[in-house]
Length: 335
Image 1 (tube, helix red, strand yellow):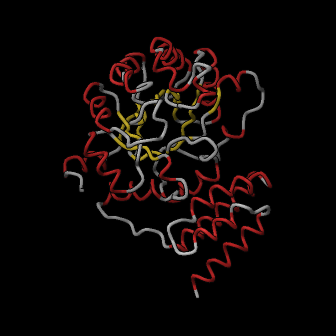
Image 2: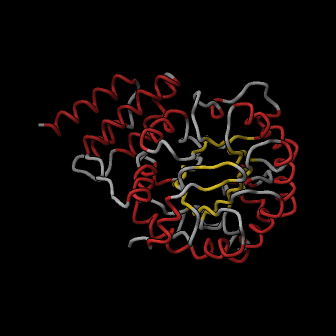
Image 3: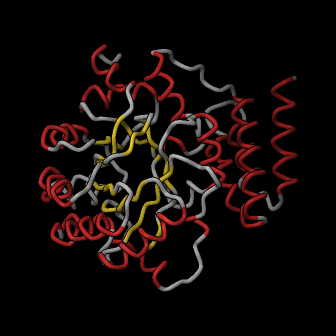
């Protein structure tokens, strides 16, 4: 499927979030345990124009801690960059937003879609879909606390019998949200079943602020189909970039040029995996190596010998061990 010429022309142009201009309509989602500085650096290599987000940050955690959490740290000049916050207390979120602004964030995003029980049972994440009055108050208070655009990321509703995303999006717009990202699943779905983009279409038809489509964006073709189906102002990549930090850049390249980038070879994928391992070790030491195991497992898939190689990499204890395993694998590919 290809985008119509009219739609493609619109998607090639920059777009506004509030009073700020952003050059790319392909965004990198915040992902807990994934979108740290190491991962963002790799995404940025392929997508220098795209807005991306830190891992989501607990406003309560910030309130009770004097130390800025590692997940909130950004590289100097890392832009455009947003910090996503979660909580249900407007005053805590306003305080956290001010700290994020001081850290150099370009956007404050409020998470109103996380389905994880430890978030929802405390009134945050997707539980706010059931409490639109509190959600609206959060947006109002945070918008008044910072000079940055305030955006919202949410889902279709709590469950199939409580899909309220259109009305919810209207409330967020009226309360001051300057962009809304819709993940096309309910809280009850988690990440199961196909994303239902038709509801994103309805949101786009009922609000004036930019609407970003999210859910099942695993390829250029998926992004094209989603954009053509929904009429959204852009797409946000989430799980599709795990083990593929080049995806955001591939989609952005297609939207800008109409050309489809060549997929990385297995050797190129392993080279990027090796760079990711080293970045995590440099930033976090031994804990970074342990964290790298899951990332390496995501890179190593869909080629002959991948299962055996993945089994080795997911047991590494040192950066040297991972380095040797990947180098040997790449040498075999060269031979």
